[in-house]
Every structure is written in C-alpha cells, then in structure tokens.
Image 1 (spheres, rainbow, N blue to C red):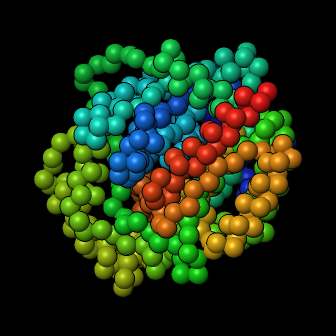
Image 2: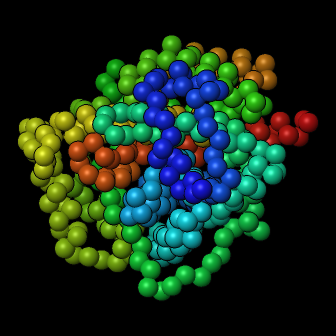
Image 3: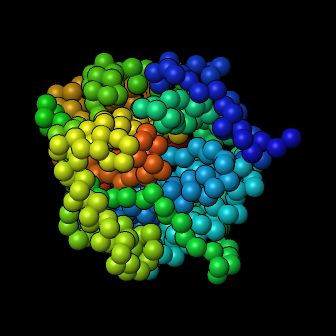
Length: 392
C-alpha cells in the first residue's frame, strides 16, 4: 500500500506545542519516505561578508521549490527552515522531481548570488537500519489552514551529518527542458525591529544530549520559554506597527533573480507597483484582493515561522535583556546537568522571506535574526557539540 499521503492523513492537533509532547501523539515516518537536506555552503563566511539576506533567500527557496512541486501533485509534505538551509520529507514518487528542482535552484543561486547548496537525500529505511529514529506530529499554528510538522528523534541529525559529507552529496543530470518554479517566493519587507516593549531579538538552538529524552526535556524547555517570555504570540518578533514594505531597487531585483535568473522588466515594474499600493493598503486598511490590509498583516504575524522542532528546538524570540539572562541561566543549568546543549545569537532586528500561496491565510513567513541569526547560533552549538564529543 502506498504511503504517498501519509503526512496529509496525519491527525492535526489543535493543541499548544507543549501539550503535543506526549509519545502517543507522534507517528513513525514510513520507511519508503526520504529525507532531503539542502544547505548553503560556507554560509558563515557568506553572512560575514554581508550576504545574510541572500543566504536566507536561497535557503527558503529550496523549500519553496519542493512545496510547489508537491502542490502540483496534490501531495502534502513537511518542511523545516534552518536559516541557511532547509529540510524536507518526501514520499518516493516525489524524490527525483524535487531533487531536480533543487539542482536547478542551485545552479541559479550560483549564477546570480554566488551561493551554492549541498543537496542530498537518504531514505527512512537507511535511517532505521542505522539504528536511528524519527517520529512526527502535525500541529495547527497561526490562522486558517497553517499547520506545521514537529519531529522527535535523531534521524534528521544523522541524515544531515551523512549528506554534508561529500560522498553523500547528490550529483544528477536532468533534462534541459525542466524549468525552475519559485512561484510564491517574496522578500520585500524591510528588517523588522522588535515590538515597542522589547529591545532585542534572540535566536536559540537547543539540542538534547540523549535523543531518548527529547519529549521530557523539550517540553520543559518550551514551558520555561512560555514562563519567561510569554506564549508564542507574545514573544513574536513581528508586530503591526513595525512591518514596512520596501520600495527600493535591490530587494525586488534579488527576488527576481532568485526566481528567474534574469531581468524581467514587467515583473520588476509590477512588483514595485504592488509594494507602492501595498503601503497604502496596510496604512489605511484598504482591501488587497479579498482581504483587508490589516487583516493580512495579522495573518502574516500569526503565520510567522518562529518555532521549529525538528529533533532540535530552533526558535526566534523578541524580548528584553532581563528575560534573555533569565532563560540563559536556566539553559546553562540544564547544560551543566547534562540534559541539553544550546547556542544563541542576539540581533537588533529580524529578517523575513515569504512564501505566498494565496493572500487569504495560505502564506508562511520564514524568520531569522539579522546579522547572522540562526547561522551564528549554530556556530556556538557546533563548538559545544564538538567539545562534548572530544570528552567522550
């Protein structure tokens, strides 16, 4: 029996994410599904030279390529944004088509932005045979039909380690008739300052020492985040009065090149006019299609991808310094007890890349901290993980 609609048919939980962290709420991913990893090569160096927006755009684009392919086949797939890359789970019938799309995206990213991707895949069968696990739940977030996958287990970390080795990287030929499809990719928002009551944005990466302890450790961590920072809406780095569309040349040009790899004058002009009109719609609450401007912004904030659990907690939070210090004190204590390892990075603003399937509820917004965000947090986490391995 085909498992092609395994993820579509998963029970959708209308619970807080901490309530989801019960063993019975998670299902095993079928052995005939595949993990695909795409990761910007040398992302740390790229960020240090000022290419943070481009790194985010290429990373988000790798997810959007796959989502468009899956949508055309009426297949639902889970996905995870990691700041400088993306992770996907796909059924076997989608594997070749998604990899082909990613290779096209990679070629275009090299040509237009000088950024290349690691791209690789591994079957769940291989993950299981190697003694690793991966279980998944589907949770409703935000407004309308926006749902996300939550994963426990060490399967994705194992896949990532293998694929980042040169021997596992994919190199395939594909028909020259294939066309890159990044429909829905948008990146026209200015950097977003934290809400008025907050003064910083922090990216946290948190990983358990033992994957078998993820349910208990991550539930406690998420409860502590709620206790210190407030619920997921309260700590969202986006707010209505801070969102601002850019009218400048560079953002639209970068978006256009990411999607098409060449100048399209009509596309550029239309996107600029949309931004110009959008400013008035958001300011005066005029209609954009079938939705009011302020209602769309409320959806945007609610649909911001600020909390990702993919066997690791990846979250971006706005708050005040005293809250960060209190949470770091908690994390450091848990680290000393051998429960977890963490990395973090403090930013003054957040940056956003968007996937707009339609303006009425079906849109998701990938969020990262400025000046490196998740990429910088990963440096601290990787250093600690390396030190931990050396002590074993």
